[in-house]
Length: 555
Ligand code: KIV
Ligand code: ZN
Image 1 (spheres, helix red, strand yellow):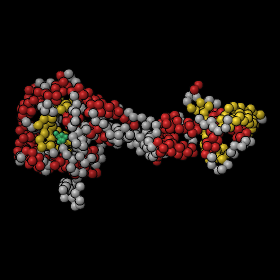
Image 2: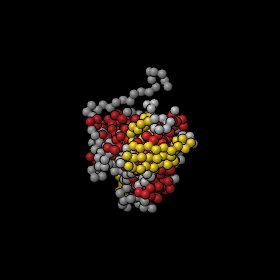
Image 3: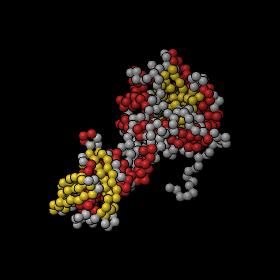
């Protein structure tokens, strides 16, 4: 990098718009969406989609709810032409969907594109030419007047040449893009858009689409919003114009630029699923749409099976949706951090049906996009007690007492530290089994029986201690008390029961009880034991044995 001062790059000039309105507005409605996956997105693929893949992708876009779909650049290649023809000839375009095709401002290409559209019910003919000073100078060696003439002549030619298509029943709308709009002088962008509109003569009922692309993103989103508001307030036929956005993501702010430009008055958004597109991509429509949804505005697009959409996208484009991609990434409904897990776990019970979504750290209900809570909490060495308790409860049905969370959290955390990787729920369950439920050494319970007399409970227990059989008796105010008193007659460490809880595991004939008992040993240590049995009394006796074995193991 160049050392400071950086002279190689310049700041992007601000727009003179003292009365700008967009900063104090809020979004209240969804825009018109247009998917450009099959054109801009496809153009950017190392291996462009085959016709079959494009057909599958088209069906996906229709299913998601796009009503305007740019299907390609039919004059650019035979595959693009054939794809457009197949859509029309095989009657694959639903009545409420308009296909859009892209075309340069050249007569031969316009003629060929019109052939591609023959038989379509409705179509958007998208003409573009590049307008920025550097494009004019380096690429076209053309003046402003030349560039304007390229656009207006093309529109006039299209208007004349499409007459037979229109007569045959195709409704054609015009979209014009001053390509590289955001790098073009605003007065010139306005001038060329006005000139194109003069030729096309839109009506209020049949508007022109003026697409104002951030072909390359050079500015901060506020400047983009200013550019759009400037255009929206200077166009003479605003009531006959749909202002369309087409942002790319070179600075990583394509979504922000789109959102602010919607505040600035734009009506329509072009982009792709998951932000595929040239260089850093087109704007990601999944995110723009679901951002609206999470502010209470239905986007009119259906992402309720985001995994299914992602699967088709990845298969057809051979790209991967990054694991952190908003809403759709593999890990976006997963919390590793202990404090986040704890807050999620604490806020989930407050989430009552019909109430606004308020689960901490999860801005959208995963169920709304067809994902489950199951994977919300995953455990690695960064995770905490809340997360472990969540997994044991949600995946295996163990509702551990709150006081036990810290203890089991530390055990699992140590295990994750040792393995140096994420632990699966099965591994967490196995560790819990090993640590609490499956301990039979040095003390193992062989037999336990109680009898009741005059409100006192008497117990008889047979155990093995380091392989030696011992028989004990004791009496108390309940089975636990009787067993603790019986154990007090041995050389085992003395302890007292601090807390006890139990619940059933499973339902019906299969149901078992699980008990959690916290003991305090004569050395002042407190620790838990847990036991499972079909008999609730035995479950708690096993929990005491478990606690004692753990205490002995620590010694
Ligand atoms: O990015 C762009 O400017 C384009 C135009 C063709 C609209 O894709
Ligand atoms: Zn583009």
